[in-house]
Structure formats: C-alpha cells, structure tokens
Length: 67
Image 1 (spheres, rainbow, N blue to C red):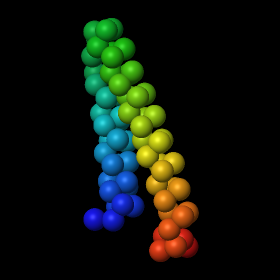
Image 2: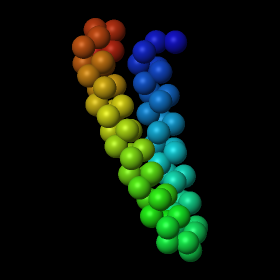
Image 3: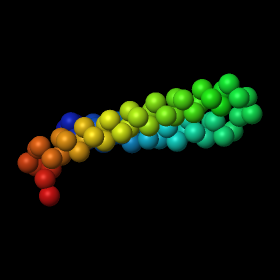
Image 4: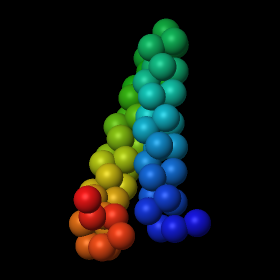
C-alpha cells in the first residue's frame, strides 16, 4: 500500500475516533468522563490535523499525486 493511501486511512480513522469520543462525551452525565472524552477528542483532532498536513505535503511533493 502506498504511503498516501496509508495516510488517508490513518486520517479517516483519527477523524472517526474523534467523532466517537465526542459522542461518548454527549452520552454521559459523569462530568469527569465527559471532560476526559472531550480532551481525548481534542487530542485526536489535533492528530488528524497533523496527518492532514502531512498528507497535503506528500501530495504536493510527489509528482504522481499532482493534479
């Protein structure tokens, strides 16, 4: 599997995990759990943003991905 495909897959997974964590936060009444889920969602979203940046860089540098 090409690096771009792996990055795209990792990005989609990180975005999905972030969304699930946000849902968990909304589904609980426990304030500590809510805070934990929100923190984890934010961390995962930051990871997704880093992956997106890397993906954009790879696509801009590799001739086969240029449009």
